Each structure stands twice: as C-alpha cells, then as structure tokens.
Image (cartoon, rainbow, N blue to C red; front, side, top):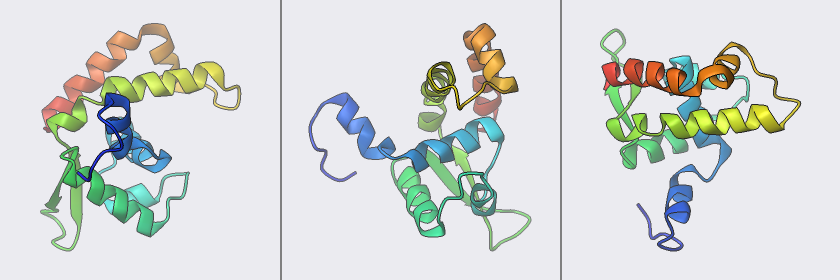
Length: 134
C-alpha cells in the first residue's frame, strides 16, 4: 500500500475503496457471483477495461481478492475473495441498504427487500456462502 493521507481508519479504508468501481466489483463478487474479468465487464455500469484491470490489481495487492488461473481455460483468471475480502460483506450490505433507503431512484429488488426485512439473516447467509469459497 502506498503512503496513506493520514492514520485515520476512514482515510486508510478510502485508499482502497475510495471510488465507485471498487465497491461495484466487490458487489459483483459477493452478491452476484461474478469471478472473471469478462463477467465484471458485463455489469450494467459499464466499467472501462483499463479501470477494471487497475482495480482488480489493487484489490489483489491489498489482499482483498486472490487470482488463480482457470482450470478450464488457462488464458483466463478467476478472482475470489480472501478472508479479508469476505469481512467486507456487512459493509457492502449496509451501503446497499442505505442507498435504497435514501434514494428513490434505487428501488429495492429481491435482495434489497430481504435486507430490509432481516439484514442480519441475509448477512449470515452470504457469509456462509462466501466462507465456503475462501
């Protein structure tokens, strides 16, 4: 990690997650089961290829994601969460819930409705799934 702006924990976290793309990549891995470069490019937000490559490299260098060669296709990489990455699930869920609560243009879909009803249960369910992958 490069030198942080300050020793404030929020500032240190923003060094990794201080842009929208990084959080959207984490959303895709955690909640949508995406694991390859091509799958990330298919997200509705349309991330540029250079930004995607940069953010994946950052997340890997920070120990949030790990990268392995796909057993089916040796020219393809598969990204997965590390334990450090899995620990971010409650944060991602909270950001998602907050966005749905305070932005009328972001209606709650199926998962959002489940989060609104029982956030702790959803977090527990996804943690169990994700920890099975780590």
